[in-house]
Length: 120
Image (cartoon, rainbow, N blue to C red; front, side, top):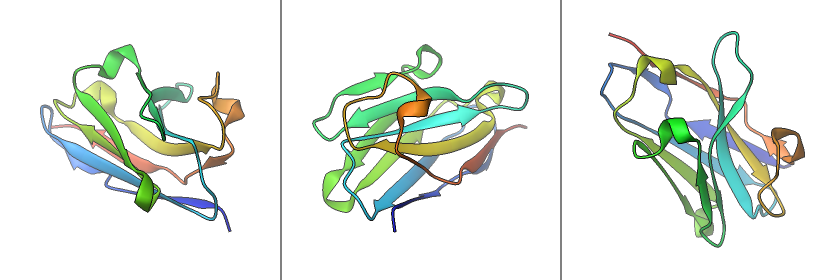
């Protein structure tokens, strides 16, 4: 059974940090990444990484978020620093067997999502 299991969401104060994890099982994925969806907004790319280390970030998180992966564990991480209230969203892990998809509809598998709330 192919699945992505996320962990690490929660409530944090502005300026704080969180680390999200996403463990894949049942298949090997070249591309793994994170999307987020805030209330009333569409799901948007946060960051993506390939098994070879190619990385993309949304402009809104550059310099604050860092994506990494452990290929041996089929796990991708998202270290989120200097969090802002506008980072509040449901963060979902996504995975694709091929190259970095051009849009969110091309991913093969999605996780259930984990809530990140940035509030004082």
